[in-house]
Image (cartoon, rainbow, N blue to C red):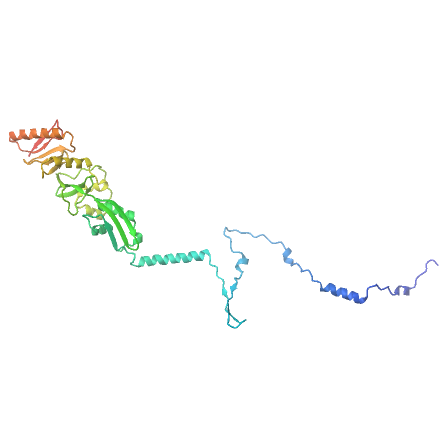
Length: 349
C-alpha cells in the first residue's frame, strides 16, 4: 500500500487568493503606466564618427554654418487703440564682414582718384615766387613745364633740383605745395661781381665763383676781357644735359662744364677785385689762360701779373722798370708779363 496514487482530480483544487484585491491591482497598473518614460537614445548617437581628412591648407566653412539660417527682425507699430499693432515684414539681419568693408573702401578711393584726375580743379594754376630780382615768374614756369600738371603729382624735391639746374644763379631754393592748385617757391638770386667776356660771349660770376648767364641788368660789375672761358675749379666732365638745358647754355658753350661744378676759383675772383681797386678808375682788366690776370695799359698793351697777388708790390716795380726801358728804346710791345718776378718777359706785335 506504499505506492498509493493520488487521483488526478486532486490537482484541480482552487489556489489560495492573495490578500490584494483585484481593484488594487488595476490601480497599481494605472499608476505605473502614468509615470514618464525615459527617452530612448538614438541609435546613431552611439555610432562611431569617422575622422575628417583635410588635404589642402585652406579650411572651408563647416556645413552647419553654411546651412544655418539668419534670424530676421520683425517690426511692430502700435496703433492708437490699446492692444492693436501693425506687424511689418521681417527684415533680414545683415552683418557686413571685412571683405565687404574693404571692397567699399577700394571702390570709394578709386572713384576719388578718377574724379581728381578728370577735374581741372587740381591743375596747377598759380605759382607764387619770393626773392626774384632779375628773373621773372614766367622764366621759372617755362623751366618747370607746369601746363596741365596735377598738383598731387608735384614732387617738391625734384622741382627744386630742376630749378637749381636750369638757373645756377638761384640759391636757397625752397618749393612747397598748397592744395588744391598752388605752388609756393622761395629763392635767393646770387649777386654778380664780375662780367667775364670772351669770344663775343658774356657770363657773370659771383663772390663764390658761381658762373651763370646774364639775365636782366646788374650795375657796378667789374669787366674782364679774356681770351678763354673762366678757369674752372674742378675739371670734371659734365653730366648729361637734356635739350632744355642745352638751350639755356647756348649763350655760354665754353662754360657748359661749369654746370657740373659751377665754380671758378674764388681766389681768382678776390684777386681780380683787389687788383681793380688798385688800378685807375675805369681801367679794364684782362685775363690770359697762361699768364693770369692783368689790365689794359693806356699806352696800348696788356700787362699780366698771374692769378694771385703774391709779391704784387715787387711785380709793379718790375713792370714800371720794363715799361720805362721799352719806351726809351722806342719799342711798343703787345704784352708784358711779370707773373714770375725773377723771369719777366714781353711780347712784340
